[in-house]
Amino acid sequence: MVFIVVVMGLLIGTLVTHLAEAVLGRRRLARPMCPYCTAPYSPLQWSATLALLTGQRRCQQCQKTFRWPRLIGELLVAVVWGVLVWRYGLSWRVGYGMLGLLPLAMIMVTDLEAKRVPNVITLPSIAVMLVLGTLFGPALPNLQGWGWKMTPLGALTAFAALRLLVWLGVAVFGEGALGEGDITLATYVGAMVGFPLVLEALLLAFLLGGVGAAVVLVSRRGSLQTAIPYGPYIILGGALTLIYSVEMLGWLLK
Ligand SMILES: [Zn+2]
Image (tube, rainbow, N blue to C red; front, top):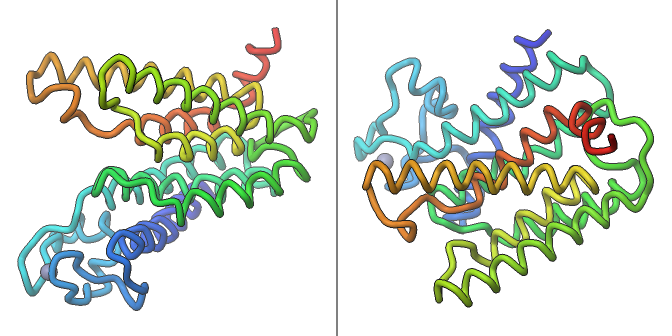
């Protein structure tokens, strides 16, 4: 069962990562194509994972390798979906959480490829998640006991926290590492996991970001300004909160 879900995750991950590249390139998703020369990919190259495994990672026309964030986006969907079903089995709540992850996989691609968090992805996702979360509770698997306030409060908490951090970043460093896109991204994560788990997601993002910045500084491969964007840490914080929601909720309410 888990194996089937992982394969499905790779397929859906392939679809949403191509959608994300289509958004970046402002083009319609006719069929998967090379982002450099727009030559169509052969079916074996549609999935970055499959292309890597079958040794076809280069475009047949311009010989450039696919952009590696697509691989991360695909694997994010496949791995998190697999872990969710492995831990919680199949239920509509697990499916709800699996769907909630998809906008995050798209942002993983756009943020790593172009340091962009397109509003065309985040704003509709926030709107949909606010409605669904108010009706059915946060998109957490195996959620028991929820109130309609959890979702709007989660979104509001994330929005306020990131707004404050962006202001602080600008005040202290001039140009902060955090951008406006990180605010909308975190707002979506807050709506997805709700309050109080949004605190856990933000804390995880903060810790992972700290570790990432330390690795960059220690390896002297660049300054904090050239470090990778902060969005992926927010996404990982949200994904880990999806996976460990039940344990964390019990721990937070203790
Ligand atoms: Zn090409």
